[in-house]
Image (tube, rainbow over all chains, first blue to last red; front, side, top):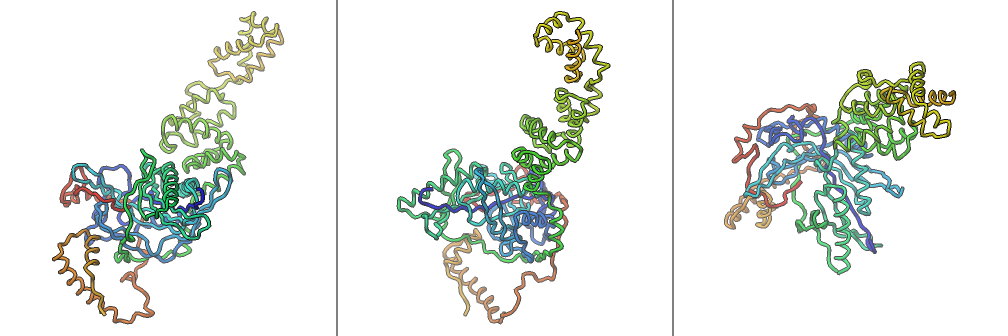
Length: 477
Length: 101
């Protein structure tokens, strides 16, 4: 950016998909009717007995391990006080003083092949707030279903030098977290939310410029566009001799610009203090080891394995590790006995097109690794042709077992010479003109005859066997 | 010596708590809160050098609950306790500022 250096830091909130909330056993479930998943604890009633969800802490530990962070051994909870209707407790339970993880990092590759590393200053477990709907009738409407859902807040070091690096980092972070299995990390559903801060300083200066915060950059493209806009805006301000003010801005999609929300004249005043209702936690090495043993294989490790063991191309392997569901499905298909390359081709080709056409996620379909492997093996052993496989694929998307479907529909490929030979001979007998054409060197005649044979055998004849017998037959005339 | 509260500080705390006071009320509050602070300040007379801070009054550590969902089905009772409700939501005066989180 001209003569300026950009410094970007990100603050990422990840909604964890535990069964129950952080401090109450209310179900965590997106899309239920308002306030259905709330109880007296979520509403912050006096005298309630909140108790920490062990699963949420273990999810946090998984993230800490995956982000190469040190796990804090002695943790206490803190209250962050603020008054707003989305949180009837008037404070958020968080880990301000003793975050679960510290000093981690994420390494990733940019498109041009350069490797970048972004430090993770800290990550901690806290509660999410409820949801307000603004009515436009002088009232707001509050749904507390989300109140108390376990959140993971991840804070980077200000190590990011450009909007492109910020976006690539976030992609990598999303993949790492997704492969721990603790969250769906879907920006469009709010299970991954990003705030950014950005400052500029003249090249050669050691002193950071005044930073501007941006809230809720809810897609990768918003993140890039908003940061690029701020780079430009701030550099123009500085060149014009103006001071950058410490402020919070929001991204406005229609104008692709950022708009001032509020200027910060003093530091936030949340009056943090230690949470008296929750006893402290101690995490020993045994517990860390237990959790580490349950951590699913990372995307990077799978990618290496697919290229190394299964001899897939890096690009193909990259498609398979785009989501945890796809990678798990692939591993299970290979485990069910399918050829690794064929399984990869089917997932990248037919399965992906099916998902695109139906706008479904893999886990919401009736496809199973066993059925896909079954179909691939039917092609491999010559039972069905790859043409017939199109029909079988349709059947397995409807949850049908491929072998049973093939048998029920008479799709079995006919490869037996003793069966095909008489059929072919009689067709050749009936088409004297084609034989003459063949002798005269017109290859078109072969295509015509094959068509007749396929018609007669209802498309079930093995094309290779048919070709061989037909040529022998024609040459013998 | 006891640290008393300035009127400015009292006003700031009131704003954070979303409580509005008239100027006269604020004078009363400054006096009352000042007295409370003076009282609390007597704790500073105790020498706490080398005392480990206490964050929890029980000896309990790691009091967890397993991650099992249990819906207590309290929605109706809770909503009936809210000042106003509509369509299963809590109805509150319009929220104008940005809030947090």
